[in-house]
Length: 323
Ligand code: T6T
Image 1 (cartoon, rainbow, N blue to C red):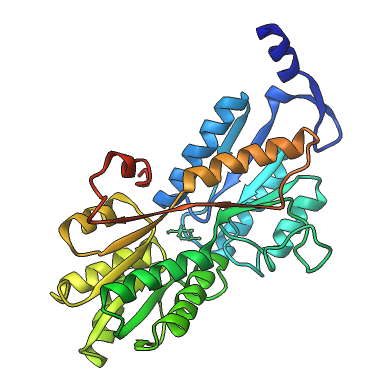
Image 2: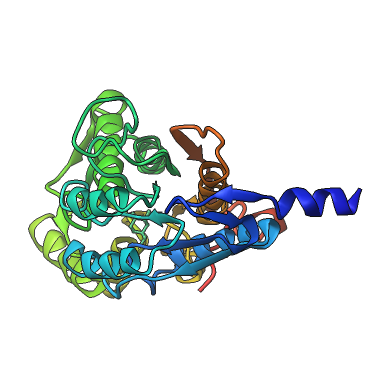
């Protein structure tokens, strides 16, 4: 039986360049939004678990900042090395279309993880960026709605809040903000959402923006940090202003630093994504494409809400991001 399985695993397949290749030689490159972010480090852990299960290689190559100008040369260098497939979190939904088309035209299947290009609906015959095989990610609009519901309930359904966000043009954080605002408008008419503060993924800037918003609105009662650095910065701003008791802080993402802030009472809740799941199913999907199987055009992964009620539970621990 064991030998049979082994024979199957070592069966030859047609590689992306058209050459016959053994399946255990397959090499997939995962290009994160940036390399030093606990979210993508955790995604890579899931990707490596899938690679180990399949007996293939996944390498992790990225830029140090979340920026399409820095991600494009990394992608071009990866294309030059000719991996069998590329998994990528594109850092801009429009600007990364043409760079990714170069990969596709070189015969390298592209799958996007976390973020998408174009409208995120691939293989439907519409749009400039229709060529990726699949999109594997959280439902970010739903996550933004979850954040709004939690925040509004915590605030008794009224008050002034704002979104601390990275920059427009990133599919994930755009959708979180849209979902957050839609939920507030539809379900919590007594919550006023102030103008979004964009921080360029810089937690220090997000912290000083809280101080500025507070100076203009001394009655501010909530801030939604739409990703890890936005949330961390907003929480630091609230702490420096000594406002933890009056301001509800909801974080998207769950690195150890945010989880510690939940334990201390500074952050009310984190909407934890499941990045390891994204990495795992990303690699499995690429493997399916490379072995001639059809794949779902999108795979939605889950969330876990972490707050004071479950922060110390054993079942919560696996959703805290790796550093
Ligand atoms: O929130 C994640 C990711 O989903 C988003 O696309 C960019 O920011 C993070 O990596 C957190 O820093």
